[in-house]
Image 1: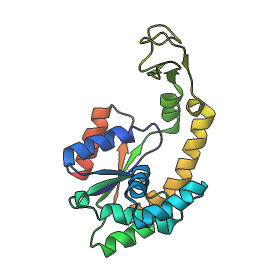
Image 2: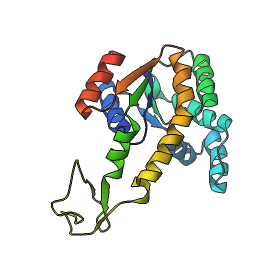
Image 3: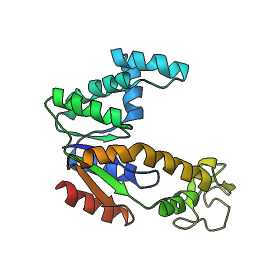
Image 4: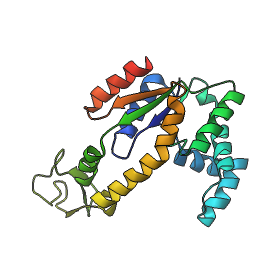
Length: 214
């Protein structure tokens, strides 16, 4: 099974990806992991990507697609894969389509975990992190015994900058702008499976299983 997993920050995408990979015994392929592996292995595309990464420059789509191609040609992808964080743009989606066609393959499902922005803000902005040990709490779902104090080490709990509401809403705005054209692209192909991500982790997992038939 060949899947693309799409979801905004805080939607639980990482948890669901892990459960799918364990159940179907297929690799979860994230953009970051792909680039790190390609650079470490010293592949042709990995070395090209490193040139841009060392400069702090944006990696061109042709190099990104080249790294993806190298990864999808590895033996562990024969039975399928989950792409996480790719494609990020409409051009990348079209290029992936062309690449898979050349390989005699295609995407089976594009699973979109859908959660309202206000729910995501509540999930993410409630996180608190211990300055001393790094343990994470949530003011609503996993609160410490004493407000502002870590149960484990007694350290001070604080809200990271990327967990503040303004930052979260900006991230969500970027997410919608990037992914809506991609979702529309795959919707026209009849591949999109929209999942209600507001339920429990188990409920979301069961809905995904029903939608993809596995």
